[in-house]
Length: 99
Image (cartoon, rainbow, N blue to C red):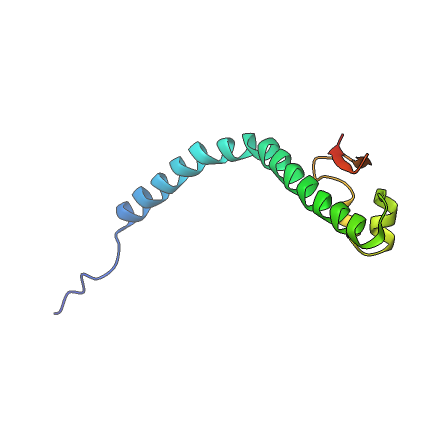
């Protein structure tokens, strides 16, 4: 009778599952701690994008806009008027800030 030795044993599968479980236990809490940093970096990037659109608006229109004007004229979209961490964008003297 021929013996087929291909495949995994139950012990090998349990060891692989244990290793995967340990990795998940170690890395998932670290990822959740970083979500605040990710939102802050995303907000900084959004401020830079909106600042570029403000400068473009000033070049094309000759005046400093507010957020509503940028939305109305299509320079930014509705999801770009506030940060993902809940901060709102404002424009003061041509400079975009998040609060």
